[in-house]
Amino acid sequence: MRRMVTPARLAGAVVGVLALTAVVLWLAPSNDYIFLPDPAHPVAPLVHVQGGHVPAGPGGIYFVDVFERKANMLESLFPFIHSGATLYPAKEIVPAGSSDAEVRRADLRAMTISQQVAAAVALRRLGYHVTAVPDGVIVSEILAGTHADGTLQPLDVIVAANGSSTPTIAALHTALGGLRPGQSVSLRVRRGGKTLSLRLKTTPDPQHPARAIVGFVPDQGAAIKLPIHVSIDAGSVGGPSAGLAFALQLMEDLGRNVDRGYRVAATGEMELNGTVAAIGGVKQKTFGARDANADVFLVPLAGHNAADAQRYAHGLRIIPVTSFGQALRALAQLPQKR
Image 1 (cartoon, helix red, strand yellow):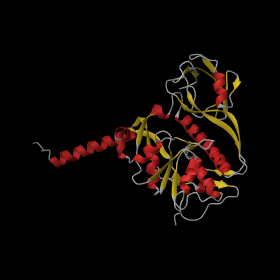
Image 2 (cartoon, one colour; image 1 turned 90 degrees about the vertical axis):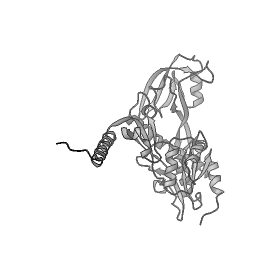
Image 3 (cartoon, helix red, strand yellow; image 1 turned 135 degrees about the vertical axis):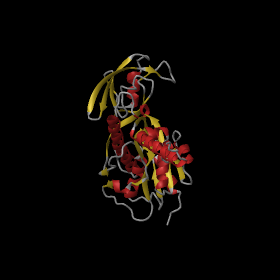
Image 4 (cartoon, helix red, strand yellow; image 1 turned 90 degrees about the horizontal axis):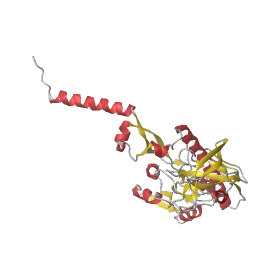
C-alpha cells in the first residue's frame, strides 16, 4: 500500500528543511563582521564638569555608536534581514597581526583620547588655558600593502625613529628624510602601557615615489592638562567618533545654550585644532539618530560622511561640519525651540 504525499505534507517538509537550514546558518560563524544601528544616546549623563551643571528644558546632545560583532553565516548571506546593516570582511576590521581583543583595546584607547581632546577643544573655546604638549605620532590608519600592515597597530604612538625622538609629525618626517624607499627604520612605539622596539621596511610615497614612508596616516599625540576637572564615562563604548558630541555637551554644562531646545545628534572625531575628522559607520549612525527622534544630525563634511548621511536621512536634517567652531555657528543659527 502506498501513501500519497499531499501538497500540504510536502509544503510542511519544505518549511521544516528551510527552518533547520536557517538555524544551522544562524549558529555557524562567518568570516565577516556586521555593523548594526544603535539608537543615539544622551550625552549629559556621561559628562561631569567641575563647576558645571546639566541644563533643564527640552533638547539635548546625543552621541551615536555602532553595534559591531562577527556575523553568522545567515547574516553573511542575507544581511538585509537587519535594517541598516553593513557587512565587512574580517581583514578590514581586524588588521593582519592583530586580534579581536587588541582591536577592542585600541577602540577603548581611542575613546579615552577622544574624551581628552574634546575637553581641551571645548575649554579652549570657552577661554580656559589648556596645556597640550606633543608627545608622539599616533598611528591613525594603517595603509594596506605596506610593511606597516601586520606590524603596527591603530593607536600605536611612534616616539622615536632611528634613535631620534619624534614628538611631532614634523620630527618624524625629519627622521625619515634621509631614508630611501625600501630601507628599514627602527621605531620605538608606545602601545597601551608597553614600549616596543620594531623594525620595518619603508615604502615609496605614492605622491612622491622618491620619498620613503612607514605606511600609516599620522595624527598628533599630546599630553593634555586641563585647568578644571572633567570626567566622561562612556562605559564599554569605544572609538573616537563621539568627540564632537562630548565637546558640545561640555559647552552645555558650562552654561552655553548649544542645543537651543533641539535634540542634536552629533558624530565626528575631534582634533586638537578643532577640526572635525571623518568617521566610520555613518549609515548605521544615521539610522541611530533617526531612531532617537533627533531633530538634527551633525556629521563631518570630510570623506563621504555627509553624502552618506544624506542618503539615509529620510527627513532627518543633516548638518555637515568641518570644525567645532562651525558646528557651534550652525547650531546658533537655528531658531530657539520652545
